[in-house]
Amino acid sequence: MQRSCDTAGFLRRSASSWFNGRLDAGLHCAKEAATGNRRESDELSQLAQFWYVGLLIKARDLDAGRRVLESAEAAADRGGAASDRMTAVAHNVRGSLLFAMGSVDDAMDEISTGLRIAERCGDRSLRPPSYVVLALGALRRADMRACRHFVDKLSDEALLGYFGQAPGAWVAAQAVEARSGVESAASLIAGIVTNPVVLRQLLVSEPAAASWLVRACAKLDAPDLAKAAVEESAALVAEQPEFSVIRGSALHAAGLLEQDAAKLHEAADIHPDRWCAASAREDLASLLAVRCSERDRTIRILESVLDTYAAVSATRDSARVVNKLREYGVRRGTTRTVECEGTVPHGLTNTEFAVAELVSQGHTNNEVGRQLFISRHTVAFHLKKVFQKMNLTSRVELAAAWKVFS
Image: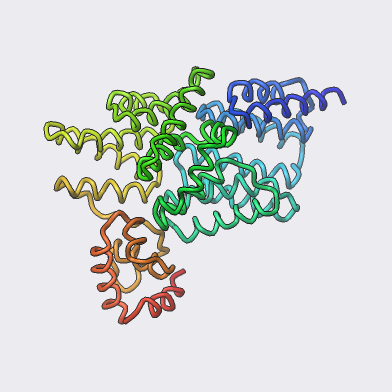
């Protein structure tokens, strides 16, 4: 009994520290909970190990996370059949680890499997974190229909009282921005930045959040909000300097706010998250692009960024960089920004397929252009080609015909 009490106590302290933005204390207590002298078959002990893996993922200590996860699964195997709840948690944690490693498709498969098992045993606790990763994965692949579906699921959980997670608000803001522009997400962004608890939890949960907030606030002409996000990021670094993931995120955000190439370069060098490091390099390239003497360097950086985005299945980001390279006369081919099973229908090109998919979902030309990083005139041109190839005359007919491929 005492052993279980010790485990539960460490878990409570770990969760409390974590939700207050203290990754260091959260990890320390999680390790104590996961590695103490307890029965290997005890479900609470298994949960402690999975929680510990989750925080190692947040710290982007992925090798350690993989080792602890393998140990936890081996212990579960020795202890006999795991409960459905622990099986669901294992799938969720494994999916989160795969997502952090850049294996988006595998991550979404694992998390979807965990969700199905959790639904079967009536466990709702995995829903919010699962929907966050699934929405982020869909956004990264530019599958806006799936992204909106999972954001709606998050909203349902919020109404039912199960939400309460800063990452959920952040991914919802990203989805709104992608669909309708950053102005439509202004209240969400302000709510995140002006709530100290939400902001701290978000900044230690999602390494891409600080830079995204600064970028969004710049578009909104809200320098005070951008400054608040940067200052909180810096405060987290001062409190927890041992985490390169926090330090890299803070440098990236500060480099964006201050237009400081040195900080962006350092952020890209030290950030342990591959996607985040590529994002910092992309922002560095944008800063260098205004200098005529840096043209060749800018192209080299963008090509490196494109390779990284492609490696981590970030097709939406790849499409943006492909268009930036075209501005320099560098063609790296087109990137399909939505998924299509099998042969592309009616001989559509990759871009035509992407335009048709988004238009069939009810997006305007402006919204499609924003999501594919092309002008509305280019969208109209591709849409005309889609109509010709599919023998259609209207967006309504396209929406009806496209259901065959959904």
